[in-house]
Amino acid sequence: MKNSPDPTLHRDREKQFIDHVRGLFEDGRLRLETRRGIKPITLLMPSIIEGERGVERGEKLKRLMLELGVSDRQLQSKMPVGERIAINLRQRNFWMFKKTVGQFVVASISPTRALLTGQPPAPLTAAEVKALLSQMELSSDASNVPLTVALMSTSGFTPEAQAIASGITGTALVLIEPNDAGGWSVHATMDAKDLSNLLDPEQAEAKRHRVREYLDENKFDLLSGGIVSEKIANRTQLPLQIIEAELRSYAKENPGLAAKRIDGKLMLFREGSALSIDPGGLNMPFWETVKGIFKREESTERKISRLAVERAGLTAQRERAYDEIASVEQKESELTKGFKDSTALAQRRIATEISQLRKDIERRQQILGAIDKKMNVINTGIHTLELQNQVSPEKLKTLENIAASSEEVDVGMAALQQLDEEANSMSGVGAMEVPDDVQAILDELKGKEEAPPESPMGNRVAGGEKTSQRSREIPAPSVPERKRNEPEPG
Image (cartoon, rainbow, N blue to C red; front, side, top):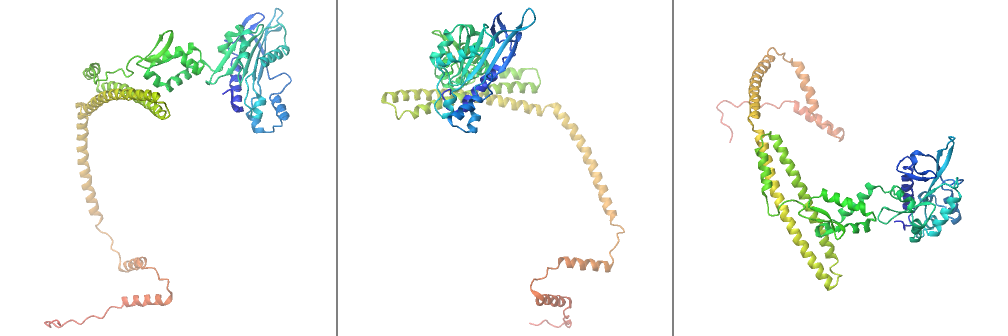
């Protein structure tokens, strides 16, 4: 990451470090060298000056961009600006005057020229570190006072520059750099060893989180053998003390895992079954637990709750088993991909490993079968208790009361229905008949609403419709009545 030509990464690293240092200005753990010994900053009167004296923030970056002929505002907004903070540590003397007794300088250094031109950034050399220290000593507001310097290089330091931190005298020096594992590496002189952990922007919680991430990503190593603490230290570039403490904590949280020293090295490995059950099937402790729940003299709801807890534990065990099977299958897939391009000896080794992996999957599937049987027993027990709870005498007594109330409601509804029928029969008495002329108008209006719309074809068709209507209105001539006893024709 520190070798990346992306200026955004360097700017983010600079901001993370400077924000972390600003947060220490009111932290009593920040103890600095003064003429009166090592003092916490909270007992001093610090005078904080941000930026270089006489130089505005980002002014050097603007001048360098003009020099290189780079006029890209978007690029300028992504660049680190070289933050610098100088703190004069003061105390009152015998006459109550404020007097400087020490100085603390923090500076962020970035490969600005390389980032502007798109070249690979180079780490800070020993000569550049010495030049920076000399400049800070010359620009110090107070001479003959202890000076503590913290230099952070977003592109890192060369091994020779790192060696300065162990060989320099007279100045407490701390060198901070980002590492490729996502954390920070800190190098300090003997006088500043106590500041090493404090000036590390990655706090303990974040370091422990990175150890957990590594363990989660390498679960297969736990299934097949174990993970050595030194291997994690090489990958994460974290102190062994933090890694070992986290391995012990991880082993306590995950059944079946153990963290023990083997040949002087702490190793996390599988000690027993992570599922804590016999792969052969249902064991006696499980049956005793279930029987004990049913024999308890307590409410049905409480028994159901206890069984639900047992079921939740089995569900967690089943999920862990599925995760382990997925890890084994992923490992098999990786081995299969590399089989074709491997030598004959390597192919035999891969085939042997795959055979062992498949046997391991079968064993875990047997464990899953046992877990499923246990869950079936518990689910049946919960169902039985819930059913008993539904048909308990207390519940049925309540239902009897409800049924009795329902009968009274039915009687009342029947009486109400009879009254309603009588009311309807009385409403027809004395009803006013519609007069003939009113009824004729009603029929006429209803006939107009039901008549079909006029055809869009002209007057001829309309006239024809009127004629047709008149023809419908003229009654057809009546057929003369046949004479009585006259036979029908044909």
